[in-house]
Image (cartoon, rainbow, N blue to C red; front, side):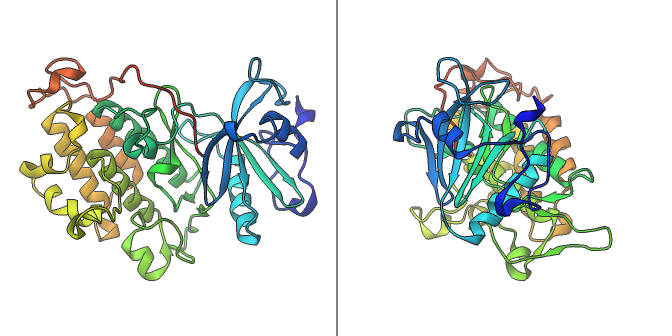
Length: 358
């Protein structure tokens, strides 16, 4: 099988880190795998380009038919010049060398002339963003149990990135970059803005401010100093989105509610007011104590003081402790998820599958 993993060529020579787990595809192969990039193969579109569904043979990764092949997601980058190439290269090099259950697996890449493509494992349930905010009938509201399980999986992914083994600052943690597999397990995708963490003798990485409005830590916006605590802040914003069902920024809401962090912070500071921020679609399917603990964790993560924020390993521990929470559901409508008690990580059943958007 080793002969199917080719070394990089063209101007990528010397830029792509050699990895035995990454296959070099030809443009012709990916065109065949996606049925000539047909419109009905599109999984998603964005500023980066278009993501198509394709099929390859499981053992050789050669193009295959939809009847016999393994589904994959093929991201075709828009032709945006050197910055697009840099982000594409970062994605290849980070996901090419990092492996973790909560990171999307990169299967290969294609670099031919101006064509930049990436091939990922296929994530049947799509993005967390679509499940929280999508209006399509293909998406159903996630239960409390699933939301907490997704938060835990995403936290484990970030904790691994921050570990000594990886030493990576993700820099663009948001709901659209959290993908869900067939069991609703979370995996992080899109490493185009990731950066190596600081060395032992450095406290931060100085960089041009990049990312997505609403998720960036205030000190990063002010100084450009990037630390792992910036990712923790972004995680806190996403955890708030998971709890509330509201976007980090929403111009359609009244001015006092447009910024989720600013709107939610007063409620997070009072245990008795937590219910004001919880997504009405949860329909009481949670324990009050569990909701209060999750809200308290979010409040710590979005602290304006980086030193007050927990590390991601601490976040993982806090979310794992919720798993054993068996308090009685306080809402009279709590029976929809299994009677009067709520095991935080009992997965929901049913619901339509949705294709991924890396």
